[in-house]
Structures are given as structure tokens and as C-alpha cells.
Amino acid sequence: MSVLLPPDCRAPAVTVLMAAHNGEPFIGRTIRSVLDQSFRDFELLIVDDGSSDGTGAVVKTFTDGRVRLLSLPVNVGLSSALNLGLGASRGALIARQDHDDPSDPRRLELQVGFLDRHQDVALLGSRAWLIDERDRRIGSVDRCLEDVSIRWYHLVDNPFIHSSVMFRRKVVWEDLGGYNRLMRSSEDYDLWSRVLQHHRAANLPDRLLSYRLVTSSKMALDEEALAADPSRAIYPQTLRGIVAANISRQFGTRVVSDEDAAAMGGFVLGVPAGSVPRFTSVFGTLLDHFEAQYPDCWQSRDFRRTVALQLDAIACRITPASRTQALRVYAAGLRRHPVLAGSLPWAKVTGSVLGGGRLRALAARTRRHAVAKARDGSVRLPS
Image (cartoon, rainbow, N blue to C red; front, side, top):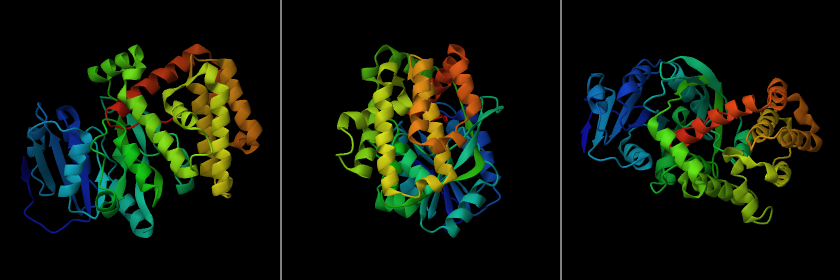
């Protein structure tokens, strides 16, 4: 293992932490996006996780003294690589950066400013643009913004884009010990869930990241393996475990059964058509108990929007696709909480219900790409 240190050993305000394995095609573009930040007091710590391509060589072409390279002789995996980086980082604030997701020039400035003004917030993300392999903007990635919305959303899915987050090093590394090195997927979702047990969090509305959707042969193979034998897939098991643990921590073990809590992982993985009535019932029960804990939650526009989009996501992820069951999801949600009518994306709802199988199949294909990236330790697309 080798480490290149800058000549100036003064601790920077921020460590931008990047772990890369065979990232040669995109890492140069991403490094440049970091070096071009309007906020200048940072170090860029890159952990080359046993790459067999020219990743390390590309990094060494940058002579900026803020760039540090930690080269691992073998691939240890994302969690372990990030923990090595956290141990070697010098900034009090850590900004995660994936090797293929360029950052907006204002990213560090806006995130540091927010955390300086909100000392009670330990974890901060942002929204993002979606780009393809040729840097073309093809969509957007939204996330809920406020702490109450994030707390609700994290019960069933990851409320943060991994490559967009900035967090306090003391909380994540010194207090919580960083990422769980035993996890082979969803290590970020697990970590944010642990942070939320004791600290506040937020997402900025600004799109401060370009999240790259790459279709690789590994992802294709992962999808084929999952389709052939879902019981062998690590990602669904891990996701259901995190969801069940989050629900148990939030409400205790008496609100819903362990089986129903684990089944809520279907929010991401898809809900079998025959299970829709039970799924929506459990979802509604959890929402009622959350409202009891946070009586003012419905006053938040962001919270109403978050729940409305969750209903839409559930309807779009029914397998096999069913117009009848999709309508039942919307009807159940609106019957229970009529206030959601003003927050539902009605154009999308109409297209999903009336547009037939083609639109639902397109949504499903997009979601499968997102799940593949999640299994690789990256982030997921919005609902």
C-alpha cells in the first residue's frame, strides 16, 4: 500500500473521499470536477481499490497538491476501501465522491455553508442530474429534503444519493466506526440508518451531482442471476434486513410482525400483485404510527410530496404489472390521507394507469438498472 501526501500537512476543512476500482474511463473527468470547486479548502483522497486498469496512472497525472492517492494491492471492496479512506482522512467534514459521478462546482461551498449554519445536522446530501456514459443529461434524481421526510422514507428505502453526501467525520468514523465492512451491498443505506438513530439529516434541493447511469456487463450478469434465482441474491436479503431493522428501531416490535416488516423491502424490490392489499395495509399502519410520533409531519409540503411519490412508486413496481392493483394503491392512499391528492404526480399516474404495459415496462427496466448499481454499492434512481 502506498500513499502520496501533499507537502502542506495542515488539515483541510473537507476531505473529498473517493474509492475507485477500475475507474479509468471516467475518473479523470470526476477529479477535474472536484479540483474546479469554488470552495478551495479541501483534500481529495482517492483509494485505488486494487484496480487492474490505468486508474492509478490517471490519478498520478494530476499534480495538484490537494490530491492524495492511497493504492491498495488487492481489491478489498467498497466498504473496506472507504473505511481505510476515513481512517486516513484529515478533514472534519467528509464529502463522498464516486469516481464516475462529477460534482457541480458549487457543491462543496453549498454543503459546507449549510453544515456551518446547522450544527445539529450530521449528514447532508443533495439532488442530482442523471447522465449517460457520454455525459449527456438524460433525467434527474430527486430525494426528500427535510429531516422528518428523510426519517419516514429511510424506513423503506435509502433517502440519500451516496455520491452526494457530506457528513461529519466524528459522527460517522469516530462514533459509529464507519461502513460495515461485512456488507457487500447497501452499506451506505445501513450507515445512514445508523446515523439517523442519533442525529438530524437533510438533502439540499440543488442538483449538485451528475449521477452516471452505466450499463456494464457485470450489472447485466447480476440482473440475470437475480432473475434466475432471487433467493441467491445478496442485495434483496440485505435490503430486507435493513428495512426490517429500521422499522423495529422506529416503532418497536409490536407494530407489525417481523414478516411484514421484512416484506416492506418490496417498496424497492417490487410488490407481487397478489400481495398489494396486505402491503398497502402495512404501509398505512406504519404511516399512522409515524404520524403519532411526529404529529406535525403532514404540515410539511416535502413530507406530503414524499408520501405521494411513494404511493406512485408502489403502484409502478407491482409485479406483474396490474392496472387494477395500481388503482387500488392510489385509492387506498387517498382514502386514508385525502391531503395527498394535491401532491400526486397526476400526469405520471395517468400515464402509468392508462398507458398500459409499455410505460410500466419502461419504468421497470429503469428500476432494474438502479438496483444493479445498488448491488455494486452505488445509488438508486428515484421512484
